[in-house]
Amino acid sequence: MSPLEDDLNSNRPEPQPENPNGLKGFETLRRFLDEDGWYPRRLENRYSFTMTYNGQNGDLRCYSIVRVELEEFLHYAIAPIKIPEEVRPAVAEYLTRANFGLRIGNFEMDYSDGEVRYKSSLNFEGQELTPGLISNAIYPAVQTMDRYLPGLLRVSYGGATPLEAIEEVEGGPADKDER
Image (cartoon, rainbow, N blue to C red; front, side, top):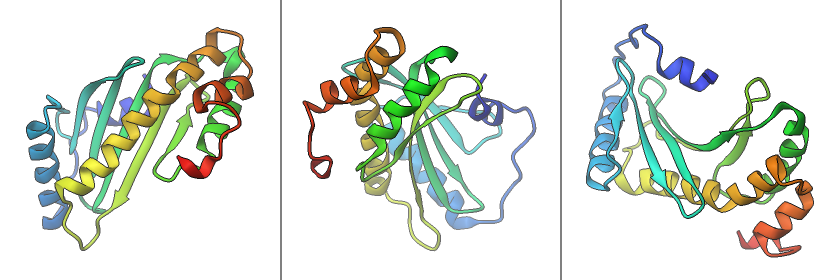
């Protein structure tokens, strides 16, 4: 189980924050996910939901989290594979190449267990967390993970170099500013 899952699935109750804007943001997230057809499942005693995104290249496990006390929204799209230890350095290079030029969010890899995820987040301190902001954080995360998943698989299991995989995904030595 990844550190993210350890934290999310912990049996310890989440502290009850005294932050009305953060709580309102969490309720807005719940409504958005329901109305947008995500079929979210709330994690017990957490201000977090889990759901699945069925992409063109694979099914992604997702987490949407509101850190109520900090007025932060985070969305994670998790790759459907764990990276074998022997190829983690090559995958780290692939993810670094993929991250360069991305405007919203970033890839992360947990070296301890091989989990790869894409994170998109925003701070809404003192602001209303709106459905539009939520959408603008969630969709780039799942779409970017889905786009780069074939290259991740090629580096992890298909013998491709990080550079070969990036060029395949991005259509050759592409101008990163177009992403």
